[in-house]
Image 1 (cartoon, rainbow, N blue to C red):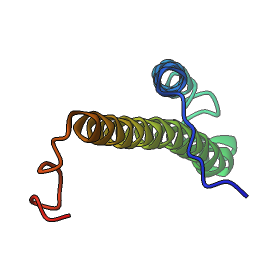
Image 2: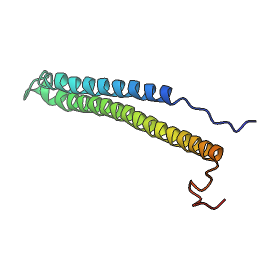
Image 3: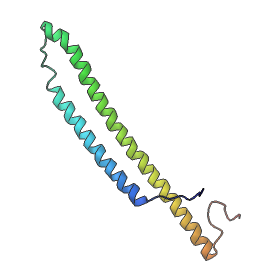
Image 4: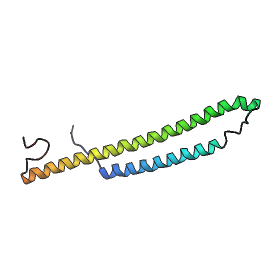
Length: 118
């Protein structure tokens, strides 16, 4: 089994951009939903028997839907943040390896995290 490490920073960056777009769309959709559903909150009525029966259920369903949509949007944002952190890690590792290769090929072995102790 090989211990090779392989990653494609451009693909990770492109994926992060797609996730950011999806996140923005999800936020827009939940905001639009909140606006639209708020305009329907009075449909069951206000103070008659039907309203008294339906308003608590309508409010619970509306708030549950908003909460679910918001949670989904937050999850998408978190995925994007995690992917971006992964990209930074990959690039940091890649740059560190390239620097070490360059240093070893030029004979400069007094750099890096070992403070010149090899």
